[in-house]
Every structure is written in C-alpha cells, then in structure tokens.
Image (cartoon, rainbow, N blue to C red; front, side, top):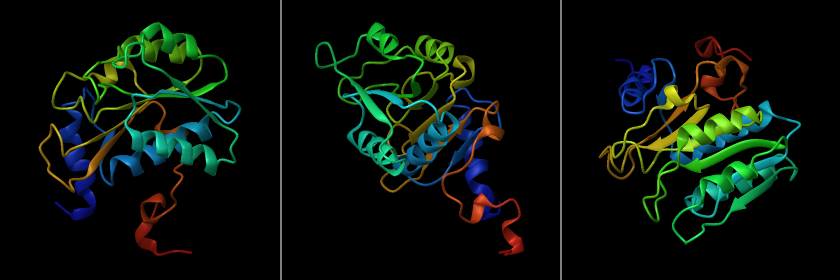
Length: 204
C-alpha cells in the first residue's frame, strides 16, 4: 500500500478490536497529539459549554493536554476533576452527577492505569448524550486486554496506543476513532497537509 494510505489501512485492523465499523479509525501520531486533535474538535463543536469532566485517575499526560486545550481556548473552559472514592475508582454515579447542561466534554480512561478499574462506557456515554455533552474515551489500557464496543455504545471519540496490549513496542503510533455520525460536523484544529481536501494541488 502507499504510505499515505497506511493510517487508514492499519486503522481498519484496529477498528475490529474496538468494535468500530470501517471509516472511523486511523493510526497516526501519538496518543497525546490525538487527544489534542479530538478534544479541541469536541470543544469547538460545543462553543457555548465550558465544562470538561474527567478524573484524577486519568493518565497524567491526558490531564496536561486537557489543561493545554483550555489554555489555548482562552481559559474559558474548566476541568472538573473527579476524585476516587478509595484511591482506585470513581463511583459511576459521581460521574453522572458531574455532567450537566454546561458540560462540553466527558473524557475518561476506559480502564484506569493505576488500578485496572473499568468504567461503564455505555451508561456514561448515554447519560452524557442526554445532557448534550460529547464523550472521548482513552483506550490505551483496554484495547487488546478487554472487549471494547465503541459503535454499540455510540461513543463520539476515542484514542489509544498500540505499544501496550497491541504489542507495538516503544515508538509505535497511536490511533483515534471518530464516530461516523459526527465526522462531517467537525473541524480539525491542525490545518496541515492532510487538512486540505486536495493536498497534491500544492495550492495556496
């Protein structure tokens, strides 16, 4: 295959592991860069909402990037950090209670790296959608280790790495998922080569 087709070709293989139909997964960049792209796209899609719900059990670099996104957007967004009830897990009801009409984005690690605790993806995603919020799941510690059903749960976004349970090793690229139902509504925050509809025109 041509090298520029590889992200989608390989992404279709990863899609089978995360319960995603074709056309929704691409393998590229790092987990952190993919989080930036998707979080920014989500926040731009909900411009009147200012709340980002996550937890202190999230992977630290995820929290750093979310803080950076809020800063880039002028500091208008606030991170609502949920605390674990026992140092290992956050009660599902606490997550649900934190989501309100001002919530733009809910983003959690599907499986918590510190404890192995797994969130109820379906329940949280359903409630977030009822409140009008978007949901982004980090699958870095679940893909390849537990069943994942992004399409069945109607998740909006997901990110994940290939160097852990997919055995890609250090330096292996990450992946991202965007639900096909919202792809046409999004705007990429990075307008590079592949941000153009005809990149080989070399147009200005």
